[in-house]
Image (cartoon, rainbow, N blue to C red; front, side, top):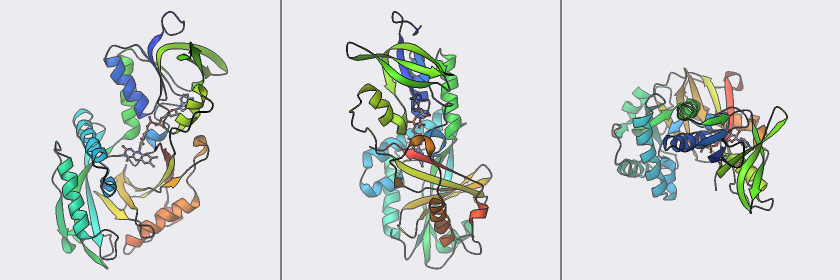
Length: 329
Ligand SMILES: Cc1cc2nc3c(=O)[nH]c(=O)nc-3n(C[C@H](O)[C@H](O)[C@H](O)COP(=O)(O)OP(=O)(O)OC[C@H]3O[C@@H](n4cnc5c(N)ncnc54)[C@H](O)[C@@H]3O)c2cc1C
């Protein structure tokens, strides 16, 4: 099916990240005949380069994006319920310093609103910590100018594994999937998209489908040009970089402000190490050649070192780094 015009797939999905994989699973469970095409390996794009949080996006509250936060918190609840092997509750501590950009009152109001929007949440409620309580939980933090903080819960996800789990379940329900296969063109019939031309190992092949879905995340501008060469960009990507350093002994995550620009960033326990991220800069380059620059590593190192007492993390401590592109509109 799908290899000739008379029996097309119901749905062809281009891009095997979390969006492509979860749509494939949903559609196959509904009985549709679906084909998923990924140019590298499933989950190798943005979906394995996230900060690995299933969260409501606390920082979006500052921009009054209440419906986005509400929707994300609902998704967090569903993920915790439906994918407990991949998404688990994670405690966060948010220390407040006298010289920070967000006052204790502002953060407390934000937390109150965050928990109000998380109506269905089964996670423990947030609570206020005084300075001694906070330092007891986070002895690695400097105490100068520290006022206290907030303890709250969000969730952490195994982002890459979640993609693979969706693909695997979809395959059990009949998904036809291709890896290391690139969609190089679209097949048009009466001005409508009727399928795709794929390339794998120097061999081209036609696949037909009633609906063709562009789920290529940060590559979607490139892909939409196959449909209409003069198409306006669908997304304006921003680059986010992370570094991984040996464990700082955290059993919970920390939500902190970058001292230079007051953006929020996280220090998170991750696979016996500590994950730190992210940066956020506009990106117009090739999505295929992302690297974490020295400046980006320095930005994150400066941010963590500002908060650490008795310890300085250097370039030599960085075990690994990775970057992704946020497919923002
Ligand atoms: C730095 C950063 C941190 C983030 N942190 C979080 C977080 O903590 N929590 C959260 O929920 N979200 C987070 N996100 C957002 C989240 O990672 C993305 O929204 C999500 O991964 C996008 O998934 P996707 O399937 O749309 O794209 P992708 O995962 O990028 O998948 C698109 C796929 O399309 C493939 N492709 C492209 N062109 C073609 C072609 N021509 N033919 C075949 N295949 C093609 C690519 O190889 C790629 O695998 C973060 C994003 C970034 C960048």
